[in-house]
Each structure stands twice: as structure tokens, then as C-alpha cells.
Image (cartoon, rainbow, N blue to C red; front, side, top):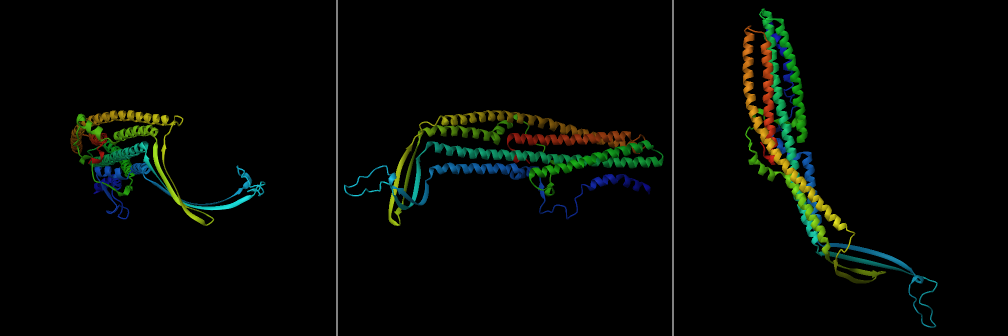
Length: 455
């Protein structure tokens, strides 16, 4: 009759740890309307849409499109209207010309000066101008359009980076869940061993040392379980931060062991698609091309511009004589010398293009290295998963055999404790091997530029 109560007492700490994994009451648990059930692929695509860095990249893309509109405006007519009224008075003595007077008649203006006026005039005018020829402006439009393509590629690259971060955060949660489950099993086994040792001591077939060993093992398992629970909760906070959602809204649909274990580990087969699919490489190449076009636009400024202008309006003085007047013309403007500023601007853009070329070349080499490293990690981690599963099976068998001997009173619980420690290590190694494989799969997808298609 006492035995069930003893076991209940020993299992109480473990049950308390298990209770931490049970959902909160209904009023605090996420409802089905707000909960987001995420797979690995779902987390990747969610982060690529609403991560803060992705939203910032989309804003930069919108700004690049606005610059195209600004450049195209140079080919459209400019229309303006103006209404002006002014009044003035003049000192007659300030005239630079002396008007001769008829002999015997007074001078036209008082030699001592007099105030003439006021003269009030109103002018209402509309003006239109149109660029007819500007080769530099055309190149600037092409440069702005390339800037849009580069910004679009950069936004896609930022989305891939956010997706990769989300994938790694998702795997961290799955690993923490698996480690927690493994330590929970260790705690349950340790509590059962305490109960068996207590029973044997009461029956006179055991010794107090076995009870002490078992209780020490249970305490260690509880400490590991507490640390694993904290890691499980912490990784969920980090995942929610990467995804830009509330932590209470996330429900993971995958487990570490259920994720796909099929990936192409042939570096030669995936290298060419990787170089073609990486958006960061494309962004650098487009930026370099845009810088060269900008340098060409600066050179074309030497060709000059041809423009047409015209205005027409009504002028009147003191409310009289509303007469239409107009002004029109064609203007050719050719820059002759600007203090070598144009040459300096051109060299600056060419230097920017050379720097971007160097960065693009280095990035292509980095992509090649990333693909090769990811495929190597993928192959080795796949082999490690097989070895870890085999070791786990042997460790479970060792625990079962040692436990049978302990229950039969053939040996003490030292063998069971040693075997359980081996089992704990085997479980952790399998979790680490599975995590390494999935991390290598994410790294390979990122190196290929296909992270958004990962499932």
C-alpha cells in the first residue's frame, strides 16, 4: 500500500516539469482563429514576406521606381503659369540720356529731378518648355531602370536572408523540443529506478547506496530537464521575433525526426543553378552595370541639349490695354568647360563599377565554397544520423538488460545508471545529428538561392 505513494512522491518533480508543457487554461491559450500552424516551409515563406528587413527592402524598391519617374520627367513638357503685378516710380534725373528741348521751350524733364509714376502693370502668362534632344537624359532613364532591377534583386536577397534566419530559428525550436522530450524520458526512467531501489531496500534485497545513487540520478535528470525547458521557451521567443508575430500565435506542425531527409548532395550538379539563382550576385552585377551606364550618361552631357520654349499672356497698364504678347524660341546648349567636374564624376562612377565587379567576383567564389561546404556537411550528417540511430538502439537495449538484472537482484543499479547515461548521450547525439542534417539542407538551399522553395 505504501509503494504507490512513494512512487507518486518521487515522480512529483517530474510531473511538475511535465505540467509546464501542458497548455494554459482556455482563456490564455491561443484560439484557433489566431493560432498560426507552421511547417518549416511555412515559416520560411512567412518570414520572407513580413520580416522587418524585407519591408525595408520593399521600401527601397519603391524609391528606385520613383527615381525612374523622375528621370522620365525630363522628356515630358513642362507647363507653368504666372500672374504678376508690379508698380514703380522713377527719378527723372537718373535717366542716362539727356533729352534735347526745343529752343524757347522748357526741358522735357526737370533738371533737378522729379518723380515719374507710379506705373502699375499686370502680366498674366503661361509658359511651356520641351526638351527635344538630350542623350544624357535618355541614359539616365536606362540607369534608373537598372536601379529598379538591382533593388528588386536586393529585396529578393533580403527575403532569402530572412527566410534562412527563420529556418534556422525553426530548427532551433525543433531541436529544443527534441532535447526536452529526451530529458523528460530520462527523468521518468530515473524516477522509476528510485522506486525500484526503494522497493528492494524495503524487501531486504537492496542496499541504501542504490537508493542514494538513484536519487542522485533523478536530481541530475531534473536539472537537465529544467535547462531544456528554458531552452525550449527561449527558442520560441526568438522564432516569433524573426517571424514578426506574437509568440502565442505559433504552433509548430513538424518534428525534427519527421522532416525530409532527401537532398541532393552533389556539389557539381547544384553549383551552376546556385550561381544563376543567387539574388545577391545578380544585385551586384546590376549595380555595376548601372554605374557604367551612369558614366556613359556623364560623357553624353558633352553633346549638349536642344530645347523649345514658348510663352503667351496678357499685359496691361493701369487697367488699360489688355494686349496679348508672346515669346518663343529654340535653344541649343553645349557645355564647354566646367572645371573638370564632369571628368571627375565619370571617373567616380567607373571606380564604383570596378569595386562592384570585385565584390561580385568574390561573392561568386563564396557561393561556390558555400555549396561545396553544404554538400559535404549534408553527406557527413546523413552518415552521422545513421550511426546515431544505431547507437540509440544499442543504448536502449543496454538499459533494458541492465534494468532486468537490477530488478532481478543480480546486480546493483550502478549498471542501470551507467546505461541510462549512455542512453541520454545517444539521444542527444541523434538530436544533434538530425539538426546538423537539416541545418546543412537549409544552408544548401540558401547557397542555391532556392530557400523559399524548401519544405
